[in-house]
Length: 152
Image (cartoon, rainbow, N blue to C red; front, side):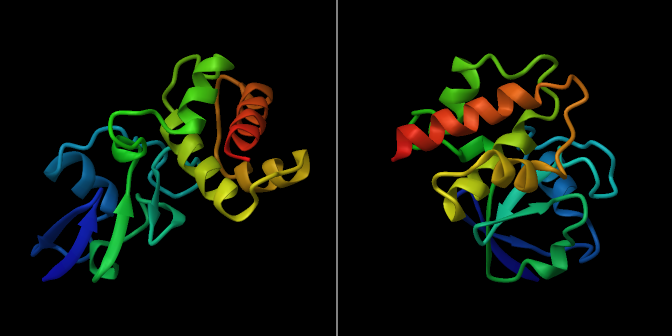
């Protein structure tokens, strides 16, 4: 049995320890903000936070989550208020198709936790593993900078 916290709720999981976290979130908990992209941890669409670190949920096995805390895009804002990055995403009209955006935002949140005033190089390094097939990388960078300024 795995005891974990997802989006502030204490939960227990007593099934296949090898099941990817992504499927637990989407299928069991119905938290569909986290997307399936490649299934190999290469595209970043499934990015969530585990104990504050950005991870690929398609590659994170349920058995590795004992006593860990998971945060998904579904609970990123607090008290019904959007997170500064979500607001910046809207301001800069980042999404086109929107499919990768939850993973992009979760990766950007992790970046701003460790680097509150990131340079272009910091942003490029942190976001390199998150693929946007629509190519909105310049808008993503601008939104991250806007959110960093708002948080400062």
